[in-house]
Image 1 (cartoon, one colour):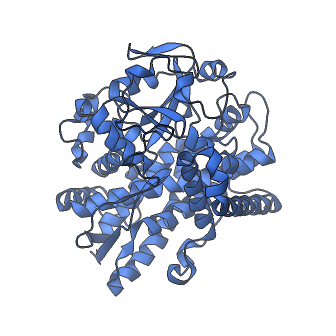
Image 2 (spheres, one colour):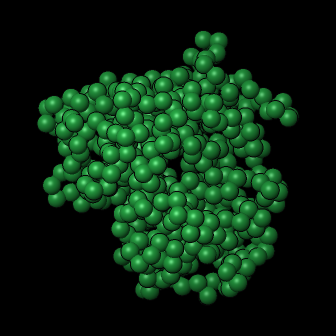
Image 3 (tube, helix red, strand yellow):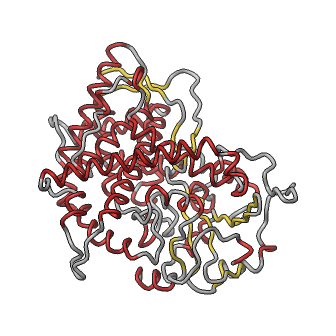
Length: 485
């Protein structure tokens, strides 16, 4: 089905397409009041929080709405029934939307940013998919434990000194080192850096810069970007050059070594497509490595940070999670690969955190043929909508009258069976959903288990959750107090 979808989308135009080009009856879709001529729906919005602004607008306008800014009209969907239709692979395919397209100068036709018609997507997917199978995952597990040991070493020192820990900063170190070591045999040395004097690793600085710049392009009119973002453009060019240079050095070191442990990089360099015999080109390898290093750590670090926030805020949930870890891992100093999946309640905590704050907060879908959405809204071939995952995950028809509350029991087996399909989408949907989903879930569950077993955690007094947006979502300024158990 994926190949049919990609073929059907092959002749669609690329680049941003305003909704007027694909939705003949936009008048049926509500938009915010106080629309300003030429400028659009900008009253009360903020350039740094477009997702949270859209969440607020959705609460007032319903399951489908549109926003216009500087000539760009976008249709947003947050209702479960409409999102289920958009997830139908026979009618819709991934749309490389505005935010994702803005990353193409960094990641090109990598797995996340490739257009459906680009052949390297299917080639890379088929070559790399076995790298996320069970056997490969079991091989990554010891390296995940090693990196987690670096984290707990740093947290032990903070606990002993009575210092609060910077959760997003440390989770970023953890997840960057994990994907770099498991996937590419590279050690960034993140935990050896003195953050106070050296700051984050330059790769992280460049990555955050690239993501932030891409988001700013979403909200700055193209005709003004060359003026308003002139300095940012220069910094972005430097950030892209550093990311490319870093990855080229990693690949060159592997080639000079004559091979590695059979990780993702080895697959990229040595494995041909099982049917066609094609291999990834050097340029595409660079793009795939950047994709994995950025996407493979940025979203997982956010998921871990949000989960730790909610655990610290809810002592009863923390106690239940700790009881499970102590029971399932009883007498085991180092958990085996198979023991991680047995932490079912802790996995519910992670899933509920991803429900409230999916760190990849939206995905775009485009019609592969003329169709009608919800029996009301005609769409021409190529018309697209942005599914707001953070709104879908708050649909009261699915999640109840208090969808803002944190309740891991929403993911108890009976509750999951009672919900319709396509209402929980933290990893996207369809053939183009995140290839590293199981990697991220195993890593995050393992780390949470190790942390709740080792520490009592408490929030700093008066902390209130504030969310930073840089294409992905992250808790801002989250610090926790630790006590060794």
